[in-house]
Amino acid sequence: MCGIVGYIGKREASPILLEGLKRLEYRGYDSAGVAVLADGALKLKKYKGRVTDLARNLNTASLSGSLGISHTRWATHGAVTEANAHPHVSHDGKISLVHNGVIENYLAVKKFLESTGVEFYSETDSEVFCNLIAYHYKKEAEDSPTRFLDSVRRSLRHIDGTYGIAVISTDCPDELVGARKGSPLIVGIGKDEYLLASDVSAIISRTSNVVYLNDGEIVSLKDGELNLLTNDEEILTPEIKQIDWDIAESELGDYEHFMLKEIFEQSGALENAMRGRFSDDKSSAKFGGLNVSAQELRQIDRILLCACGTAWHACLVGEYLIERYARIPVEVEYASEFRYRNAPLDKNTLVIVISQSGETIDTLAALRESKRKGYKTLAINNSVGSTIARESDGGIYQHAGPEIGVASTKAFTSQLHILSMLALYLGRLRDMSFQEGREYVEALKKAPALVTETVKLSGKILEISKKYKDMEDCLFLGRQDMFPIALEGALKLKEISYIHAEGYPAAEMKHGPIALINEKCPVIVIAAQPDIHAKLLSNIQEVKARGAPVIAVTNESNPLPENLVDDQILIPDCHRALLPVIASIPMQLLSYHIANLRGCDVDKPRNLAKSVTVE
Ligand code: F6R
Image (cartoon, rainbow, N blue to C red):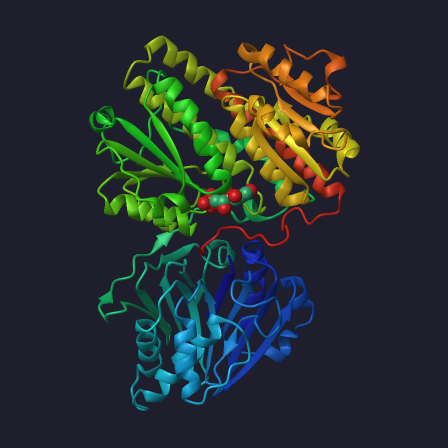
């Protein structure tokens, strides 16, 4: 949700800010802007549109200066207009700010500032924030060396809501100030330069040394020094962390889209998820960072899996896997519902949150609520150093590499694979036999090769996509753990192609959705479980009887009768624990090709942004 990049150093700021914004654009892409300070003057350029449009319309020479801030927006308050784009500038022209998050009491603050004569030019809460800083700046002693920093700190006391901000002042040409509450912010430490960003991807080309800000912290970058303090003025010692990203991983290479690249990277992502994570006797999994002993895990009576969106679908699959292999009861909650539901949980409940970005605000809030209530919490997460990773009691890193396409693909299958490994680990702590564990490990190890084989279906799926690209409605059906895969297939298709799609348990169709079925509503059926094949065949018959085209996804060894299906995608046979991963791939490829054939912007679908850091 929105991206921030700030720079202070010895080089020209604007090209560095623009490069950072380009890498951050997947966070939000409705408008963008840059403000640079030079010789006490603020130079500003905003643009309604993509970062590339801003770059095209911006003459970096006219924005010369070595201190600046920039932003790529995903609209929350106010329409997509140039006036609402960031950076915002205070009415007196002294303060400029970029902001991620939502200020909940902005109307009250705005009213107060208006009573002091401030005029507003945009509809945003961020402009209010900017003017509040200007208000406090005016009140601070003019000769105070910390005047600017103090004015930001004082403003924060009057702000309710969430923020990650970067601020500059025309009076302080050597100072960049940042602050965080509920919206990520990091400082990159380069050679003779500092960067402020909402995401490591923005700064990775310049440095791999970073300081992650915690909620309630402010940073001042001034005269080559980094000063970190709390809102209550307690001075902190910054903890410098090393990012182990390879810059090439966040580049497109020969692929047309990040989504396609990430679909094809899934084999490697699964390898990474497994690396060093099997027991010496190869009968179980092991995880370095759980911070929960085997003894404690044996005491667990219930597991709560909590997440949003695609990660929530991974939780639904996790429920099947953990209950089937470890025999522990599992509940799945939308993070956004859990935090307000006040559900009574058994005291021996383990809470596991799943989040690719590690910054999704609802998932973070669910994690915090669980901790507040005293539950042990774990996170399955793809972003080292993210807030969720830092705040959970322990967890499992996915190591899937950066996911840039807004529609999650490799992060999802890597979450599924980790959940399979977790089910194995928990199962071996309970009733799963040594022999069963050995077979399970052998099966898991085959996953990367099976994925490599499955992505080769891309060409065939492209041909099928050509037939269905103009549909406006469709249903995805599956049973057991293929039901969440049907939900995920429907989500993937709707978010990138804007086709109305719904996922249903195949047998539930008769209880309502069957009314939608006609020749214009294709039905995608995942019929890959040999044990319930016959049941799925009758569901397909019900669809066919109503004239809908059927696309079936089934196993190579178990094809469906040709007269029953219009198109058939045969996936390799695999161990039952791997099926959710393998069956997901045709869903991803179908969505990708259909969206691409419809001319949609696959990596940056309308209204969406990667990482939802607002409620
Ligand atoms: C859909 C998608 C989203 C995310 C959701 C949670 O393709 O990517 O539904 O899964 O916003 O994001 P994370 O996993 O970062 O918490």
